[in-house]
Image (cartoon, rainbow, N blue to C red):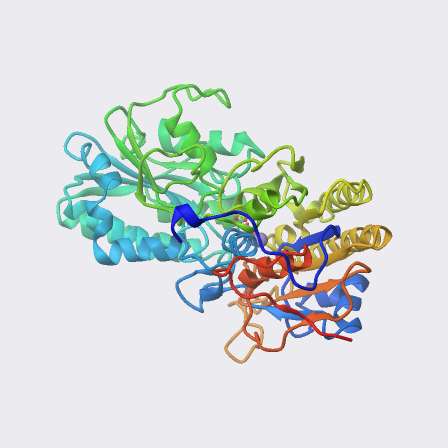
Length: 559
Ligand SMILES: O=C(O)[C@H](O)COP(=O)(O)O
Ligand SMILES: [Mn+2]
Ligand SMILES: [Mn+2]
């Protein structure tokens, strides 16, 4: 498409009217799976979602939400919020961070790029620090990529390497941290044999140390800063393996919430604080949970907590995490360029939009939805509302979260008739699902269902249209299964709780009094995925989608 002929103007849909209010609901972590007792959505009372499914076979379907359908490397990759909301909002499938990093490593291009050359300047005199999530979850980072980066960096002359590890247990099974640390530390030992001074330096559980998001709790970043940069933490060990094993046993914390620790030498001195002249790479490819640390590492002026020391370092992200803020300014792999999202088109075509969620998912319906772009396209046409999340708790103690508040704000926005699109993310099934607490997840699913009802009721009142979907699975399957689908037991005979997302498809339902007669789901896009939703929604707003968008899922038949 040459820029001269480009236009934001969308063609009118030949049959569908403009001006309807659309309530667009994303249930976070709400997949479709066979009913059983580990399917919290099935166990919960969810009359609203049940009626959408039962009532109208032509207005309810499943869409793919994992793997290549959302730009991930393979069909073994579960969906996640970033890629899910990117696909929903952008209407096309972009190769995502995981895939881009794989390619940059396999081709060697990573080591020829500007970002790597920049950090390499520190290899002679300084230490290379790698900080990030240590697992094979593939949502924020991948262990195999870290190992390749370690190998590549040492081949490129890094002589002293320190790894700062954040244990997972959220995108992977709880307890799996032990195996991941073992693999890492074996590799570090191999490097030491080759003359590279390489070891683990600090760490903690991802939800308690370093990986907060959307500025929900800066205390999390401070704990990480103290451990990784200052070399200070309440727990001290001689190796990462000892740290993870002993902290799990002695504090009872799970992988997600391990307290911060530092690795010390035989004299009790931390082995790897970050000091002037060092290089730092944050190895996560996904943005949301690295932006806060990136600010602390990069910004000269910073007032979120007392950094005590602000070392002069060369810092690069695995990717650039925020394209608007250009943060960090150096990165090893260029992020996907997601342009011409549906939100931007619709704003140019007069569609007034309201978007809302609570803090923990606010960036999902705004930043991720808009192709990793912060803020509104046009503040006169859009209002984005963030409801503060509870912080400092695990959401199984508050499984209703802010679902009611989000639904009330959406209801009010719909009834105000000021907006054509009222878009929300309801976090409950995902955030509580990640805690692995089955009872609480059932409560969470019920609360989300009630919120959907409130939004649909408001849509009924204004003669509008609802579109209800999800970004990936989570709460519909809370147990790890074997290939035949039977629950797996651990060595003590307990079921292995699945805290992660799943490979399941998600529902997509349309309806409401404003839906023109004859609108129904097409039968000829059986493999439709989240990226097909954007064109579908554009049609329901009365527009044709751009020709390079994934096809719409609706057709209009004459009655
Ligand atoms: O960051 C998280 O909480 C999980 O790794 C993924 O969850 P999300 O993709 O639903 O945000
Ligand atoms: Mn999600
Ligand atoms: Mn999640």
